[in-house]
Amino acid sequence: MPHDPPKNPLETLLDLRRREEEAALATWGSKVEAQRGAEQEQERLDEGVRAAEERARRARERPLGEERAGDAVARESYLERLAGEIRRANEEAARHRAGALATAIAAARAARARYDEARRGREAVERHLARGEAAAAEAASHRDDDRASEEALAAWLARR
Image: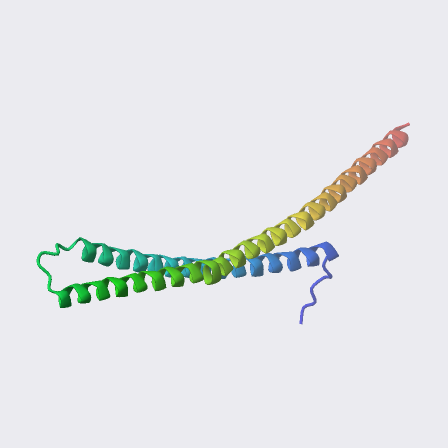
């Protein structure tokens, strides 16, 4: 069983930050889907309000002609029923807008904020790791330069 060399603690932290970012992205995606579903439901409810209002408008605009008393009472009853339908549809749409839709929007925004925070955390570790790698590369370059200088000096001294 091969043994992996120990990781730099920053690389371990970077792996952790990447997993956190991926999890936050998945959560954000699910919250956005839930928001889309709530928005579609709100559209359906708003369309129900519009349809009820249109039925009431058509009923009010229907020519009256010569109505008998019974017909007039039935018409008024129908218009009252439509008004109640509009009121209930508006209340349901408003409840959904203030409840489920608002909650879904807030959850999606919060998930986006958590994702942004996780991304910034990963980026910070990557910058820190890159600075450390750059410093190590610079130190290695200085060692190579020093070694080359020492070898050149030794060669010069050997020729003397």
